[in-house]
Image (cartoon, rainbow, N blue to C red):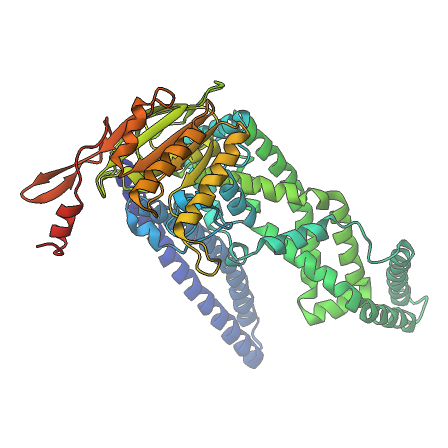
Length: 594
């Protein structure tokens, strides 16, 4: 059974299991209404008839009502979990066709030339195909990894090992992804700058109240209790206790303004961290072999301890919600003072670690997102990272990850330093092949699996010149814009960094004579032992670089064939130079030249 069929079956089972829970929720809701009405009617009858039985009925109905509230909460929690599982399954299923493009695009960071050329980011991009991250740090980390940050070989191998272990525990991985899917809408729309301000607040060690004021508040609370106890046993009049209550209320009114901002910020911190608790808890239910996952697990273990302490502070803070309880507890215990003290104590103990907890969740979300290709593709592998000094990239049966696997055509190539000329007719697959090589290398640097049977590569920096756009406002033509892009490659080449250069339809913005001369000059400038250059072109004259004793370029091509006066493409990479064109045939098919 294929992965798509397994997900369809899983979706059907989840929906079938959810159905009785939905019926149970409706029955519980109806039962709550019945209990509430029963308690009210019985209380009225007791008031009228003064029979103790009706009071018992009312109290019993209240007890049942309280129990049903607990059952309703538990049932809704189960339904929420099933809804998240179903949503996650549906999102994974959309990766098997083009319907994933209908999802809301999430652009995690500004586009750069490589990201734009290789569809790493933006609408209908690799980022949106892979991203199942809900937190700001998760989105930022995934985008950074796809851009090639943190691409040391040891880091790549650590991420590969972590993702492979997550894939080996598919049920647990699905549960983790479901926990991310359940993040609240407030969390999903939380901006990184808002999160940074909360982290800065949590790290702050300033105290709102001096120590002498805390001692004074404690003494006032003790004095209030003593006065009321002495009043109860008849030693002192109750007036002394009332005076203490009045003093406490006056103090509460004075400090309320100063405490309000701090307590609101604490509420925001608690709201943000509430969604993280599922990760903190789930990561403690299993053990890992991967060092990266072990590190994340340890950080979340510490986070779980901090969350338990924060929950106690939030319970204390909840007393402020009701005006009556707020006034009562402020008069008796100076509530705001002790809420602020509890908050500052939590910040001193855990505030400095808050950022590490959130980034640990973000790292885990990025790893889960990078595992998506392996979850929805039948053919995938983890690339082998080579430590050769000379650049090398070998891809066997590689496919573009954003194409449906049932229509994607696999191609293989073995690249060493030098120049590779790709020729072919229009729409034959040259550009897609260049993007397949580039996007596979970017996935490799992220530590993700790639759509290929095997891949071996050294660490390579990717440079591209593919989607070149003019800029009228800046007076930059498409040809000059391409020159600027090529200049970046030449400058990078001078730094002797191992690199892969992908140039599509080189210098198409100028005449054929200049195009060929300039293209040869660029190829010569980039022909260095640390550079792999791949150039697609319609100019067959560039294929002569194969005969240049210094360049010794390699020629490959794509071609078309005809069936019943229709152009067909096999999208297969073939050795040698292309010998056919199809522009005139395409004009006839388009009805321009009939």
